[in-house]
Amino acid sequence: MISRRQLLRASLTVCGCTTCGGLALDAFAHSARADTPTAIKGAGYDLWFIGGQRETIMNGKLAAALDLRTLASRQHLYGIGPIEQLRGEVTIADSRPALARVASDDTVKVTQSFEAGVPFFVWAEVPLWQQVPIPADVRSFEELESFVPKAAAAAGLDADKPLPFLVGGTPTPHRVPYCESHRRRTTQHGNA
Amino acid sequence: MEMHKKIQVTFELENAITTIVGFRSTKHRGIFTPGDSNIHIHFQTPDNTKSGHIQKLQFTYAERATDWRGNNNIAESIFNQMGGETHPVPRWVIMSAGTGGTAATLSRYIRYRNFDTGLCVVDVEHSAFFDAYQSGDRESRCSIGSRIEGVGRPRVEPSFVPEVIDCMIKIPDAASIAAMRVLSDRLFRRVGGSTGTNFFALCWVAANMIAAGEEGSLVSLICDSGERYTATYYNDAWLQSNNIEIESYWSMLRDFLDMGRFRFDLVDVKTALRRTL
Image (cartoon, rainbow over all chains, first blue to last red; front, side, top):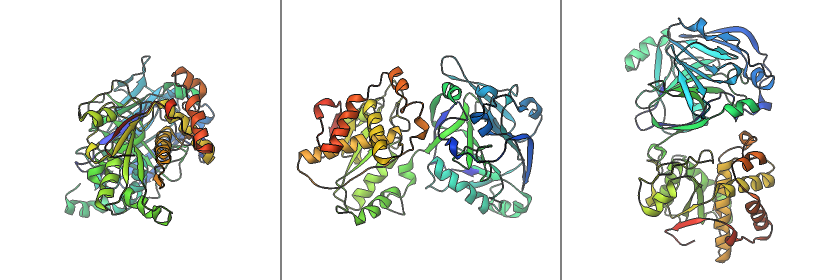
């Protein structure tokens, strides 16, 4: 987990839709939509994804590709994606789901439930995280984007592989998956 | 695309202790990361009452986290870049206020290096910074959220340090959006609303310098791309539905850039000066 010291508290500009702005739609990759879950084995984590953002946005494939209830029993589960028909957002942190939907009064209502389908989704099971402090000069989304692979590499992970990560506000730090090969080093530094 | 825009709700979490869940890949853009990014991040608050997709993220207390004396911070980069200009020391640096942290970093660097450069911070229509600067009351509030994404806050951020700001101005949102469009036309690329805020203020400062017979350089930032605002700031119907009339500002700015004539009588700019323009 990449973590920021006490000094840094997150001030987030967020929206209730994964597909919001900034996606530079014409810049989407040419990768095909994944119709069944694709599994990727990382060091200390397992990652899956299904569906594709491009297909959802550009081609209107808004129907569920995955029923979240099939993930309800998974331990140490982390996942993100939109709700089917782009009715909101799904965020799962350590197996705790949050379904954020926009209400008629334009407020966001969150339900703690797996009762939803998702047109595309990425999720991972991560039993242990390795903590990495975030440097003071990482202040924005773009700087975080640049920092994550460095943190992964510093933690001994393959930065070329798809990777889950967490960022904690005060006082929780940012983390990358903890893998067995790092047990000694992590323990020595006492930051497991 | 239009449908998802309709359900988009933008809000801010300030000083929040929250968990950000992220995934990174360089090979899955348009699959599970956005088309223009290698990371896709969501957040979840500890009480699980708020969660969602993170479009922008800014760590506050930037002015405390940044070594404002140098070390390749934004202020040092700006002044290094200006080294080859006719007027290498800018007369003014113009910066809109998001958290105020960048402005504070810039000003402290200016003072540390003893440059003869003023810092002009520009605030937007629905924001508390200007009132706080003018009154000295950090408890100033604004009941309406800013319509210019990334700048303006309903209350004063801890990073906002009025003591190091030489001048503040507050401009209508219509001026920001008009300036955004004018600048986009000149650059042949779309910029965002907060860049329009900066650019309008820069024109206003330049017009004041022209009126005073001054020469010098001015510095501001292009903060954001305009591609994300196709359905809003660049959409006339959206402007109309939000009662934002940009025509007069748009025409006036074009005249100013083409002929150097700035119609101060047409613009609704509030000013608070601690240093003469």
